[in-house]
Image (cartoon, rainbow, N blue to C red; front, side, top):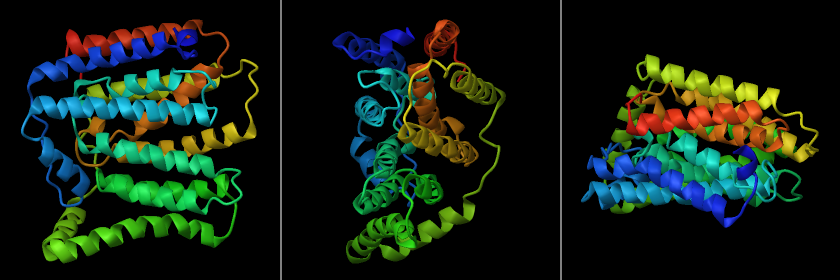
Length: 327
């Protein structure tokens, strides 16, 4: 199975598309409406949610199309940065599987929309490595992060990730460190000006104040099932990453640097799991694990035990969607 998705022909895309549809069918037929949060700190999500709230089916169709687009973008980023092979659909396969493995994830929710901009942040940070003039990439990374936070506000913590990995990706002066912050503030400046001129600025400020006053980290979103699932994924990733990554493939320094940057992001993915709410909807960790698992699958030699794990995991995911409701 792993060797199959190391290739990129029409059949691989057909299989991935069929798998995605199969995972989302229960959501399409459920008739459940996505719960709009209406939080003042998520204006982009609120806008899209209001446009779609006339039909639960349309909400799920939009969420599915969004996932497809994000999947293609994710795979393109992985191929471009040689995290997977030059001709590979491994990234797309792993991303769809991890982002749709539970019924909770097959909905339209803030993080699902934020993923698009988070991927663009990652792409621009990766591209900045070895670029002689990376200022525009860093500016765009900051701007995309601002847009991501307008969909899912806790993603704002990724600014700390950007500041930590920037010296790894692009050694330079303090000026380079400030460019992503400028891009971030640039987007929020125009948003605040727009609300000041055409909206209710005092109410918006009050909304931010109230949200930040109640935003806290806790373990309330965890239960035994989510702990088991996340522990399984994290342990499997460690074994895949360190146990099957010695196949003799030559990996450039650039690839190793980008994987190091991704590994640092694990901390922020775990941190967001403790934001109030369903941990499966605070899914940065699934993006990080998709990168690391795609990388591990692409470079391992003996895939026997990894194929066994992947088969069992696929069976568990489909069973969760169709036979028993684990999550």
